[in-house]
Length: 233
Image 1 (cartoon, helix red, strand yellow):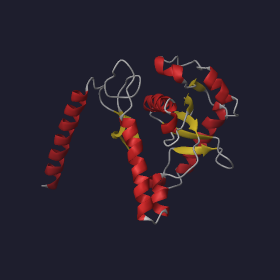
Image 2: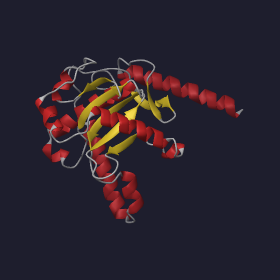
Image 3: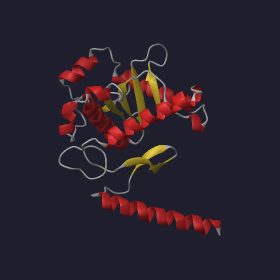
Image 4: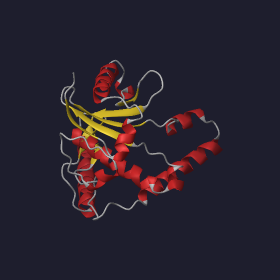
């Protein structure tokens, strides 16, 4: 049986207590109501993630996925995302919960932009993966819409919706006090540009200001351009 070494349920109160006890399940009225919907157990989800990872070894790298609906057969009740980058994924869960809670306070907007609710974060030492368990949102991805929609007018409407969502996120007020660049609660920025093999990685340092981040990006860009120039000669 998998040994769960960390599990917690996210709720609005989590945003005010980023220091999480690694052996404690945070239960609130909201999370208890989620559990009553018949969500799968930690053991079931960890086993499913291990099986999914094994299945992905049989497909090409570019079709490899790090998320899946559960149950995979039948009517999904949750979407599970997993990664070896434990801290990176945990910060992603907390940040996504912040976005969900912020949209929840704007009923008109939340009907147009759907951000999945985070139900649970699990870290397991047997498969060495962390899992985010979130709401399963039915629908099509932007890529699917573009592939299936022949009308240029409809595509234009779709892109306008994407732009509206991005503009809405950019208008979000960050948590108080004003934090430096990075995830909600602090920490290094996690992004694909800092990772490898299609896995997000952590920035080499925590940036204490936008200026520090800009200086790092400028320096890295110059170094990359010099490398490309040397290799092309």
